[in-house]
Length: 459
Image (cartoon, rainbow, N blue to C red; front, top):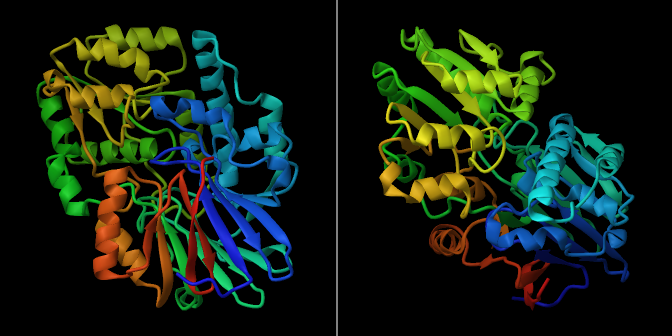
């Protein structure tokens, strides 16, 4: 660690594990001027972190800018709370994120209202806060560099994690330049679009990288083997041979549409001929329509809906589908089984022997999906697969970081404690000895040469 620099950035976070992503940057320029910004302000989804949702890492009135990496609620779900508490400056994100964000935030508000009625809790924000949030949004193209201060520039870089997702580059141009790259949730590929390479000029910068580590302890192959390999198609086909009813909990944005496309591909192989396919969940239906109608441009997969397909439009239709003896596949929100129509379907399916519940993504600790995953008694009915994960695994993350020619330090973030510790070992062995774990209690002061000092803090 070195201390010889008058320009530096304090990097602090509110989250300790996977959800609730909130990174505070306190930029000190050589003039003594302070610039403060947030990268994301996400909602905590694990039950044991719910109390964190009402807390903010900083008084929003002190912030100079906010950037959003993507439209998932664990990264953007509390942005309207900033507005509710007085934030009035610009909120920057990509065009794609801006397209999806209002629907996601209003849906999140609906969930909060339902929880508040059940648990006698206060909602964090209101519809007018969501509307004002969208008024503060300033949309940016990928690779477009813009300024939030005469000495602070930002560039969004394309990211395969999700339609509209980005890595965020922050360049501080002062007496000594400080450059930070935030991966957000990262992936190098996407079913719906070809992911652009990171520009060479970015790869050549001296950088401190703040990286996710959700699957930093496992390779892509290890994740697949842990869940029996690429087993989604196999599970669906085998269940259909036994005329089982199939329930597929899925995240509303992109995961749902990818699952529908996968079902279409299975149909094209000659299976599921006598199966009806349904999509339930208002947010998933909205996103499906946005993609189907071409609101997101240049998708390489345009025609993704399966045959014999219908939306579930009300509770009467839902009840009829549940009670029907016909062969059916129901794709429904939420992906972790915690909210949405999944809460209605799962108890109905779990008690029936002739059914399959196929989860398609990560289930946080304490969620309905995680409880089912941990109960071996349901192993014949409930299946899990990691093949659709939008998070890069250890090998892909290491490949990403190794592209940069002048790494000053790596801060490891957004993962459980075991994953972060393991990923730190891999980083130090293969790429950079200057690797550090970022969490709620420990932040870091970063300058042009890397880490100046560790900051002990309680947010």
